[in-house]
Image (cartoon, rainbow, N blue to C red; front, top):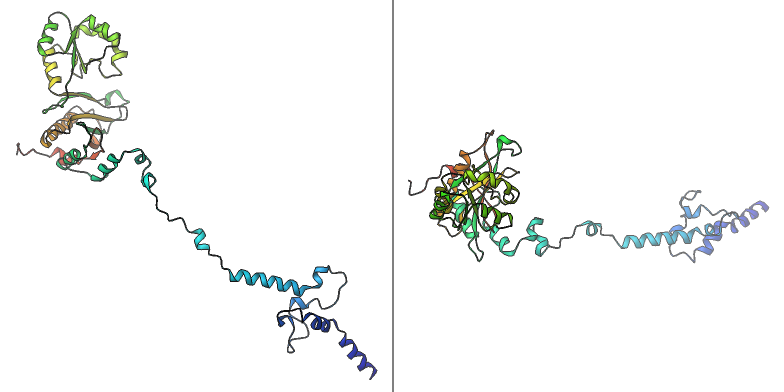
Length: 342
């Protein structure tokens, strides 16, 4: 009897009963109390400290409240979901103005240029008739634009045997007024004046050129004047005005040379990148005249070409002086026949 009474008294003062009686009123949920059907060893971490330990810190003596705070924060996090898709999704704000242009170089173009370049496809090859028609539609400036041909050749100009410098007589002219100066002496002076030369002189004209006189487009010299003209190489060479036999500007037949340049004879040469730039008329020319001049220029390049492997004309473009380029179909251009010839 005495032992049973002692066991009942010990059970009455058990710490588990103390926690259950005192902490039950503070708990908002009875989930932390073990059920009657549970085993003797509790599975809840909050009840693993039901044995009193005086060496535990003060915060660990109340694990129930700590557990409640953790669960409350986890519930709060669960109630406010984080939308990761919106943070990772890129901005879909459309670009406006020059920022919407696909190429950086187009940001420096004028509104006129950006409008007219929509008339053609940049990578499409056009036949000659369509290309010339588009070219004239794109020439919308206030002045009459020149039209130019640009050919990338399959040669390497750094070698002496792959240089290209020649002239071509454009059948329909260039549409420009050419001012011709002639260096001659003796009877050649009178012949040059009668042929229509704008400026004629000898040593006196050489002295004027040394002083900075450059008011002419072509300089023609007779062969006997070349020893004196050699001293002008540094002045005339960078401007492309130095007389040269390949360009037809050093000749004994001065009247014929003057007439050819007045009518539309054009000198061209390949630059250091292997490209030939050649004007062949004005934008106000009839379509047929521009085509005739263009074909004459192409045939001249083919005739005077240096030895090369493969196709000579790698890329072919025409354009107005203030407009975008138009790519040509070289095969159709070489096979083109004018309606008059047909």
